[in-house]
Image (tube, rainbow, N blue to C red; front, side, top):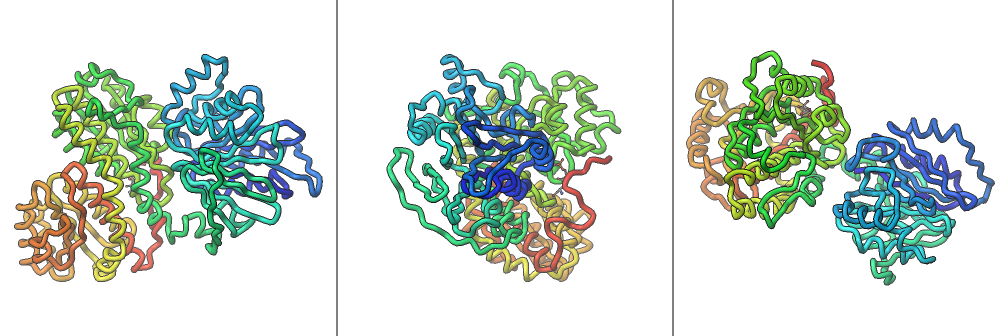
Length: 613
Ligand code: M6R
């Protein structure tokens, strides 16, 4: 999510680090910082905002560097998870004696208990981040051996990390390590560059080493020494990168959208990490901030959102009704304040917004607050306006979404809504056993999505076949009805094909008049409640000569025999089915748009964040 760069060699350190950060800026941009080790001092400069703001601040300080002098430093651009995007929370973080500086990507789940332990030992913390505990831990465990102190600290962490650390006492060494968050080492001639992403190092070297989870790398200008967590040497291959800088930013993918579609298993893992409680069959959503008693007293929910977030809200409506027993309404955020919604003091107004900046959703938050509702948010961007104004809520932890078409935000919103319904349901009548069953399914979801992604080529073939259509319908029932809406939205926004999503039963109340052989129907016919009726709806469409593309549960020969093309979805319950099914539809839209030569990441007339009414 955030970006890391570190360098040891003889290049001008400031420019090397800042140029690397600039290439990583697309990953996170709420604050940035550098730490440079010179003459036994670590100099840190941080700024909120973009890398240019940091460059301006750094330009005012003189970092003299003689030719051929060894230079060493680390830098970071942040996408906030723990703590608001402020200068104090920006990386690098120092231990209190200023002996070590560290940058970190990932989430440390047990940071609260470690922090308490370190405070007990006299450490003073200055930030709200989970990261700061790592550098304090290293300083606490340091007895003269840098590597040993880092390894011993990492052993105490649970969660994920990609880190780079420097030490005053070891002015020629960077230590980098990885568990769950990528770290790559660029091997140059008498120089090493470490980064979280190849795009930051590609202009310096094309020889790289990818660290594996559990690896710790000790970098000096002329050598890299890789160990495991027990400090036993391990061998990693040297790879050659032949992407250009642009492709590197997209991780080798052609567009951000397809990269983000493929990131979904990891995004879901990040969004659920540390939030599932097997013991209670419930979820741990500390940002919600309400006690079980307060949650149990909520009488109804109004979800306010726009676009894709609205469609995720519609899935949430099913969850809240089925799991939490709560009457739920999904409101177009744009209309919310112009209606007279019935809001009681025990009504939960839940605003969903990836960006956290959508003007209409923000207005709904303010309206909910004015009317005395309990207000909460589901946002991706930490510290965004909606996140701040709601004050309580749940972050997606999906990582930055650059493509205008929302993909991983939708699946993470759905999974957060499921966890939220579980928490509200467990505060009321939903049994522990059923809660455990849902948790087991949530845990399997990333793998289910991976299975769909493996079929991308099959979906591409189907997409090619229908890429010339000018109209299309998506139909679904039950939990797949909102997915039909989202599938149609995705297709129209990036391929400019006119597509409509309908409840399968609604089709015959008007839109069926438009069906004919040039109008494909995408029927969501997975084997979940509603499938039997969907079979009749498919027949109705076939009778009007529309070609049918169905999503169906693996091995469902009944559906396969009645449609033109099938996109197979692994077996899963109705609670999870929206997620793999929408991933298949995202791929379908992407490949149709690609075939039509559309501008996929920046479709015409659209903006990533709609901050006007
Ligand atoms: O940032 P938000 O989730 O509030 O944005 C809402 C919509 O503008 C957004 O979902 C839009 O519909 C996307 N382009 C859909 O892909």
